[in-house]
Image (cartoon, rainbow, N blue to C red; front, side, top):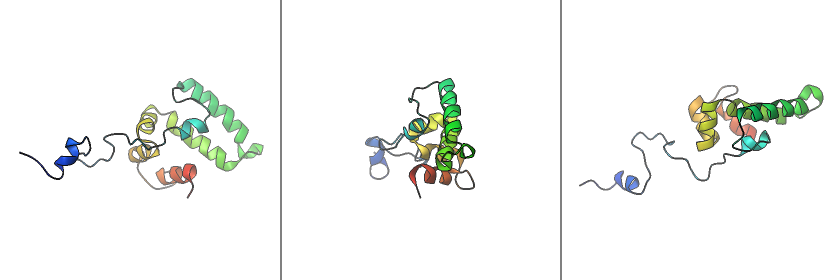
Length: 120
């Protein structure tokens, strides 16, 4: 009865009526970068993430002779991984998921996150 576009994509497991783009996680999305930045495993509890954040932020703080760029990465990673909703979005969709959740642009926005972790 139904066929053709857009129904073919649904039969093959893809597509979304609302075009959210976030209905299923993409397989090629990096969901480890923030955990690597904080030097914790993906299944780390909040307490471990917080402890690692404080340790790394002391080491890399610019006022203590640390690298300002690395310090900003650590802060951005902690901001996402310390928030359960943002962490869940990141674990499923990478930084794109966090960008979709938090909006785009502006100081400290998603554009800053992308450029911080991936250059640009």
